[in-house]
Length: 355
Image (cartoon, rainbow, N blue to C red; front, side, top):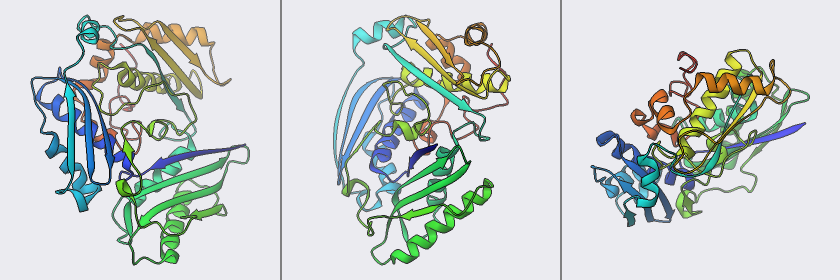
């Protein structure tokens, strides 16, 4: 059975937008923990548009925050970009539900975990993300910021079938050198996981990849939600994460569901687990809790649901307090996936289960 997962670099235009949106969010929360933020970014060439709602005692310097991100991800336009800002306060109709400690919107959020890797993430997704992480370390001057990786894994044979990297490179770079660098990264990662190195290698299949970032494609916040989560191995609710404060259950409930899925596995109740939490606007408690263990459960799903409800406060404020979501620096979540860094509170395995 072949399954593929993808990851994208911090220089991908969609990820540039995620970083700008989360930079604005983190700036607001660092000055006012009660800030309510829902901000999206669009970039094309050197034109940047930031739009959304902010209700906060702090007024962010949007131009400076955009400049800081571009200085690293699109350095040629860091001081030469056009910025349009359309920001208002949060709708009073939405605010009344949040003021009552209820969910800021309706929707369903999913969390997933598997014991197939130490990060409790699917192996093709981990391999693809490791590849992007290696590309981003700055060891290869021939390579530029925009890149994608994709791994096709054979779950039946437990081997890598195809490893793909497409990476932006300098005008002077020879394609043979780019392929050599990427192949070396692939083999190194496969060796680290004790996997085969006789997989099919694809590097820049179309050949040249000099023009990248916002000059090759437009970018929009929230367009890489599968790369943000589980590489397609699990469901995803309708909402993106970046640019949203934790009163938005799109973000807080997705983080909580991930934490619970990991705890279910750590408690020995399953080898693989997907949690769905669903909410109604203005209502504190979830309207639904669903568990799927993909036939790996050591206990019935109904028992696991009761186990969850007994141990976790699933109200928006309960999740925010339990995970400390008003104190998180969300700049760290806008690249390489939101479940990658093991010290983030929804990933930290040293924290106790539930209440």
